[in-house]
Length: 224
Image 1 (cartoon, rainbow, N blue to C red):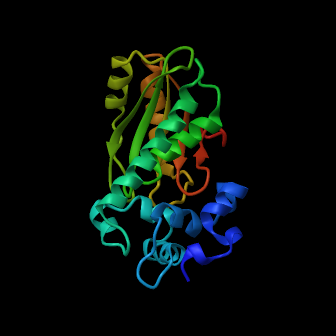
Image 2: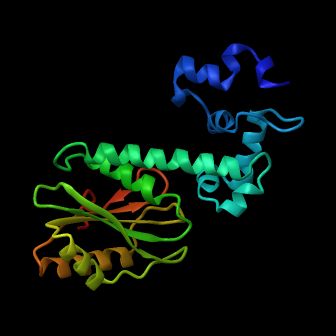
């Protein structure tokens, strides 16, 4: 049965308008994005199949263009639409982080960094460079690695901090496995970076590990 033939309170779009997007399942939200199903399958049925095929929204959103476009009911137009939606989400979160003169919301910062880093299938190490009033100067992704690690070079971080005249910095990197627990290697490189930046009087405010869920702050855990 086509979705248009469902009762009004069961259709994803009508439910979203009546109850809000948070009331919908992943499959229902994806069905709204897909707009139409395929022969013999409603958009919701197709969405459920795609979530199984890609291992959830995270797998679908992080898929390469080639992998995405071979999915049933997908293609270049849907891929372009998805990338536009994701980039608008990132920019919306960036506005929330940068709206005030001073970076005062760890929650907003965490959401922004998660939006930036969570979809990568490989590790990426990034920095938020701040001035002496904790206003954002620049977000920069400095190092990229493999599925289980990235080489981070303190001298490069120091060089970039000097170039933008930063007074403080927040680090972030993702764990493609989804497990956000900091490793011993994470703690060691954070300490090396902290020591290197101290020589040029740049303070390290935090290091976020991004995975599934909310992510982990080393500062909040007393590990910085």
